[in-house]
Amino acid sequence: AQSVAQPEDQVNVAEGNPLTVKCTYSVSGNPYLFWYVQYPNRGLQFLLKYITGDNLVKGSYGFEAEFNKSQTSFHLKKPSALVSDSALYFCAVRPVTGGGNKLTFGTGTQLKVEL
Amino acid sequence: GAGVSQSPSNKVTEKGKDVELRCDPISGHTALYWYRQSLGQGLEFLIYFQGNSAPDKSGLPSDRFSAERTGGSVSTLTIQRTQQEDSAVYLCASSSSGSMVGELFFGEGSRLTVL
Image 1 (cartoon, rainbow over the protein chains, first blue to last red):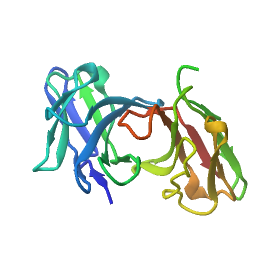
Image 2: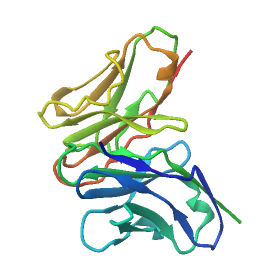
Image 3: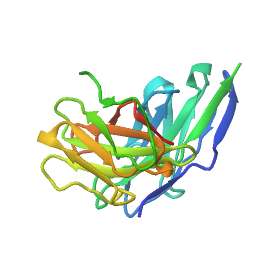
């Protein structure tokens, strides 16, 4: 069975500093990996995905994520955080083959960016 | 409409009553998902529809939960004899294809409170 771990319930960062939100996964075979963001009282929005190819994936709002197969990780990063980045972030995985099309999500990490 | 539409946005019901939650996906999207979001639990997969194929019901927590998708478009999630532990936000998402790796587009959810 596939699973996702987001070890930090909350990450606090000062505006202008780099941010990292951690994600590790477990899946049979190769993964498709995703990050989604949820702003207060809103649905989830897609940020970026890793399918194949370059391990560094760039997405919306200046976010990027690095796929590391040996460490089974897909950490979300941004060079310079903004207060408006404060939101709940979810990592998700599905296997390339098998497992149907079910996307498995982590428990989420609350990002708080302060002035 | 332009996005995934869910109704009602909020529902308060008494324990033991039945509830129906509706999802209207993005026009043309063949894949439709239901997830449940509980505080501190992340997103829990419930059910997945893809075209005319048999739905993946592997995430439904009990036989009190059922879902249907009529005409390959609108979906209804039904919870019978609601319990307090059913209180959560129920999220619907659609995708343009189930066999390719496309991102999910989420609605804003239906918040269910069981008293």
